[in-house]
Image (cartoon, rainbow, N blue to C red):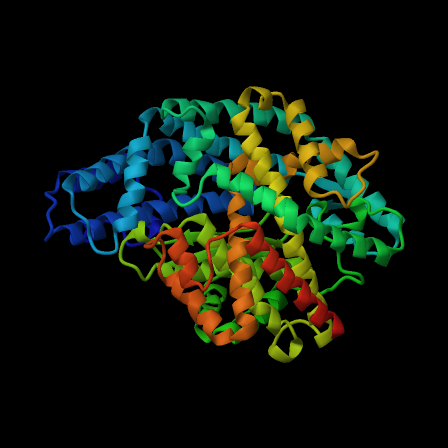
Amino acid sequence: MQATLPTTTDEFVNWSWSQIEPFYAELEARPLAADTVATWLADWTLLLRLMSETGNRLEIATTVNTEDEEAVKRLQNFLKNIAEPAAIAEHKLQEKILASGLEPVGFEIALRNMRAEAADFREANVPLVTKERELSLEYNQIVGAQTVTWEGEELTITQVKLKMQTDDRSVREAVWKAIAARRLADRSALNTLWTKFLPLRLQMASNAGYANYRDLRWRQFRRFEYSPDDCIRFHESIETVVVPAATRIYDKQRQKLGVDTLRPWDLDRDDVYPPSRPPLHPFDTVEELVSKVDAILHKVDPELGDYFTIMRKENLLDLDNRKGKAPGGYQAGLVQSKRPFIFMNAVGTQNDVQTLLHEAGHAFHLFEALKLPYSQQWEYTSEIAEVASMSMELLAAPYLKASDGGFYTPQEAARAEIEHLEQNILFWPFMAVVDAFQHWVYSNPAQAADTANCDAVWGDLWARFIPGVDWSGLEDSRVTGWHRKLHIFQIPFYYVDYGLAQVGAQQVWRNSLKDKAKAVRDYRAALALGGTRPLPELFEAAGAKFEFDIETLGELVEVTEEHIGELEKV
């Protein structure tokens, strides 16, 4: 197989299914035994690497320019004519190795995952997955086209938010309302899109024999170590322990501003986080961002820093914000090239620095996991993936100072770290809103089909978990907040992962306060395991417990508030 398959995706991207299918057929037909399974898995891995990287490269092209119609057509062709039949062929290979009874060393978790995937596979769902991804493209196109004309200049939402970095509250209010009005202009379009997503997912669950979509999604995410009920208890722990701490942060911001109530324009990202005042301005150009993050990462760990330098030299970073670019940030695996790719929308803020460090953590995870021999071993779950990214934000924080190659004076660096730690506390309640909303949706799909009910539930959850901000007179913007969370549309139930991962990352950070070198070693040891251990063991390798009860959250909030107090002295 290695002699005839392309070695890069440059050629493979142009292959038809008729060219690819024989390689799947040969693997399916080849005898499988203890002395041949290693070669068989290696050949399967090569095919999977080419398929994965090709799909990711095509999808990347649609996000770097959402207006590129040809890129959309190429991706749609791949999804329909390559990925669909490949999914069926993959299922047959999974069944083959499961039927063999073979258990290669280091493949135990991969086999567990395959058993779940094989049991849930339904050929009828293959075209529905394609349709779902096409709807995701529509979401990107709607949101990516949102711009605001401010003082005669057309700006993206991300760019115009920079205008809120002023002490003039009336200007902040005007900018916020301009953004809100533009978003509400798409209310009908996004509601219509939702009414297409929801029945599609319910049909997938029904096809797979599940009473509800949540149970199917749990298996798809390979969540064997915790249940939906555990998530509900996590929400309750956050409400008990974290919401009071978050409310203290909001009250501190209110007092700082000298106002009676905190309004959304007194906050920043997601209308949740207090902004810098005066704003931290870490960089003017993307090249400055990249070069200084490169220096910071070498301080954290020289080899990890070298990984980032490779990405920089090989043009694997698309970081600037521009019209027509999809929102958000991500890391995508180009696994045949054994490289990650980072996408984001930088405009010169400290949040951009954190985002790049976050995505770099994902990239390091891939670099480390790709040292394992088989593709199924690289398939770590999102919870440990987000520990990798969130931990890197925290491990890098001590090196934000210009004296370490970073961006700031000691006072500014302390302020950046304070704001980051406060954001972490504020994130848990926000995460609970997003996750609890999704639990409601897929537990009550008939009600969720009516977007007015979705608005009402989102509004109630916001009031429950984020009580420190006054939204009076802004109800339409508040209750449609679910429109602005792409995970709800594109990656359902992928959000509690961030909350659980932050519990792990905060423990990695706590450990680093005592012994930085050991904390980094443990962090890298966990990344190198890829997906070869159960989730609690991966957390343990990183020096953390997979716990999210009141006691664990309470300890982390206490340590965080104490460290914030120390930084405030700087």
